[in-house]
Length: 239
Image (cartoon, rainbow, N blue to C red; front, side):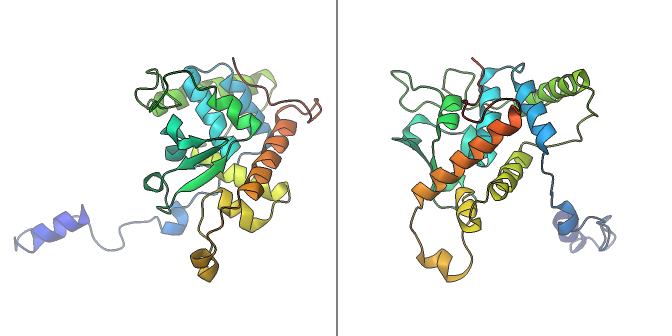
């Protein structure tokens, strides 16, 4: 809007732009978010998802936490992008504009589901039988927040502060550090390019290391979600 008003001001001597320098009170630093869900909040969200519909949204949100991927990378995932037990996110859907390989752990596989015969170019998280990706995020998030509030009220926890789906990515990254994952590998799991010459010359995929990291993440999430159960049990998934 500032650019449009300034353009018009150069063509009309009587026009004064209503947007002036210093008007914005929010800096880039203030716009950045640092919200990370704590253990109680992770349990609340995971439990509330059991009562959320559609199932595509329920599986998608859990997949975000288990993969530490961005929303667009997971929400628009198609079956051809899965090669053996690895999801190869194409560069046009990644922030770095490079293909990003995400190993599929057993916990993540449970949320992706099984590929049905005939699912050639279909979307994995869909309410239209794969013809289009899930898109009703705003309404689904509101329903999830209602269920989260119910879950927390039942066990007398305070209301959960506002959160976004992207906060799950930040939460997953923090859990990786908690699981003593090497920082470089954790950043590669997130699809971040390493700084300096390493990012330019080191093109190794580190699939084994990334898989180990995501398995550690799944194991830690499992202990958080069910504190009373041995971490040898498989993550609970909705039918």
